[in-house]
Length: 201
Image (cartoon, rainbow, N blue to C red):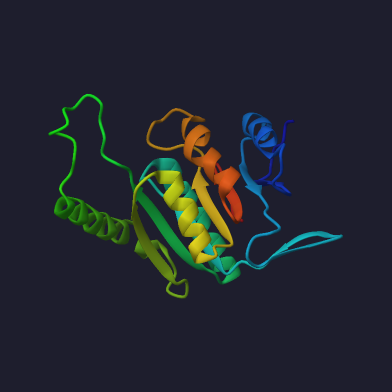
């Protein structure tokens, strides 16, 4: 597969072979990849394919460069479809095997303070880039990253989630192999894996 000049490659439906298709596509195309979920809230299947009524878009961020690219794509899509945008960051459990038991637990009040600071940081970094007509919801969750993201998508009836191709690790496919892989398999909505080198939607 050698696709050039495309901003997004679409994979129509989730299924038993979907992850293998994702891996093949991910290795061979240099653009973003969208996997449709016809059972998602607002999606309908017909003989002509899948139609998407997008009212709620979520975007996951870890403040990495790729996550920022995903954010800008999510902003464009929200503006295009007149959808609301939820920007999600998950604070993972602070467990480090190199630390002693007395060193790694974070007191609850410090955890709450961290969440508050992250909410403010997200607002300062991203809010100005979101058009006034796009409702923005900043969400900081606490727990296992992919589990909390999928739970939010279910509870919020999200139509599409946008994530970066990889995160702060800087190693391509590491993020895809963990968080994004889990989201692809478990998300109740369409999933867009965004890459940095994308054009206009």
